[in-house]
Image (cartoon, rainbow, N blue to C red; front, side):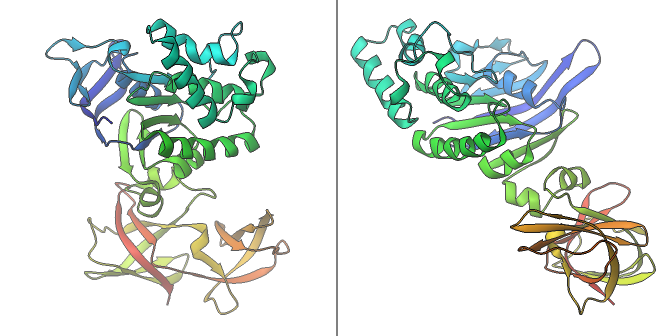
Length: 372
């Protein structure tokens, strides 16, 4: 399986619009990489440049040790020379061909022997659990079944890398959940390298070995999903990952030492103790980043607020509480609910409370937060 390396890759459309800005990225063998970010951030452009469907303006791309693009040396291999497969959003199945013919068509064009084609198609029919539909046409299949056929067709020639551009966006919520499970299992079964584009952070969290989070063409963080969730590098990453979103609470620094801060938050005094030294300058104003699951509603909490609204889902309830005009989200696990405007006491739990510098937006500390 191949390693993929991007060095200083840049894409400029026209004379001004920078879609991807000096992207450096190393994609290891057999990894499942998700390119994540808001619409227009450059994730699809990045995918297309690796696949050879878009020509970078600057930089270098190598796949399996082979330079497939080099701006200075004039190297730009076409997609069919890069040994990659591409799964499009709309599946693009041939409507006049059966499931078997759709999967076999590419292998026939590559002049594979008939026996090898039959064996390979058979493997994929079983792997993707679509053998019962082998003689059907795409119009006779559900959306999920069509997608499995499209995946089988893409995997048929055994590409080194499989590219997927929002392949689940046309499916309903239940089917999307089922297909996430199938894609994650497929990644293990095929031992392939997957590169996946989505704007859905839940897909990125559940599928990826690493997430590449992009904003306005710039790489914000490239790390395993749980690391991005727990240790976001900046406010953008922290806000983009997680549902319900992280609480961002402004606070003033009253006193600071090498590993702790005394803070003022809406007239209350809080103490933050970092799990080590701060990683950047701590100025007079900071932003506290607190995941809703670290806000605990408890009778002995030192802080008091009122219930603004509740969103029960059965397994858990998101409770929005109001403190001096500041809305704070908390997650309570189990079948519970709270009346609107009811007073509640709360505290901050755990060692994963984040401190961001207000001016730069960068994370400067991780630790515990308590009310004094």
